[in-house]
Image (cartoon, rainbow, N blue to C red; front, side, top):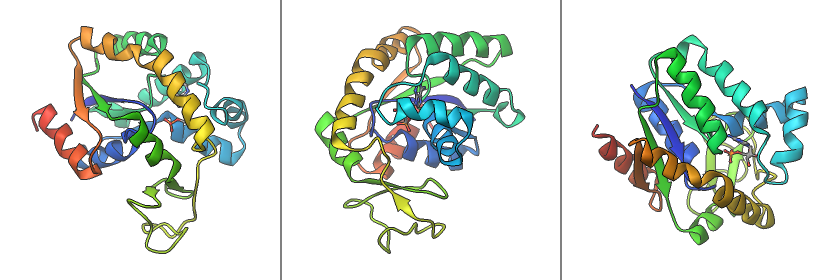
Length: 215
Ligand code: AMP
């Protein structure tokens, strides 16, 4: 079991890879984006605050995200390992995460950096659909549901994320470049970075990840 971070630009496949690794390692998959989407759907105070940022493709303020993740990492099921998907996204979040995990004596083991070309990612995101009920990710061309608009796994309704429109996706790339990409250097300097090709199928990416981890 590992304590892993999945890093990479929007659409690189962090969520899909994290789901697969979570099954393989029997470790909790912690996705800050999913936590926000769930809270937005339920109309909680956190959801209402987050929505003004997520809809525009902006980052939710560090303090909010750090509190959510540290609270989640205090839960017992993360003691043996976990997969962080979409967190950290700024150097400040990474520093706070390091500080927190060091205080528990459970530092991050490795950071998987999913690498893929921006145009490919753009196509992936514009065609992406997500199940409203279970969160399973599809693509209208490369991974369609068997029945249009209906999740194969749970029968829930699939939808396009509000932030997966072309204009918002372009903005999310800019935000990634300016605020999140510096984490590549941060984790390389820490000797934890494992670059993995994210341009193939989900199976290719999973295989490449397991081989990078030496599993
Ligand atoms: P994701 O599903 O990871 O693409 O996240 C969707 C949106 O949630 C992002 O575009 C941000 O608005 C917000 N978000 C998720 N994780 C973070 C984070 N670590 N820091 C700030 N905002 C985040």
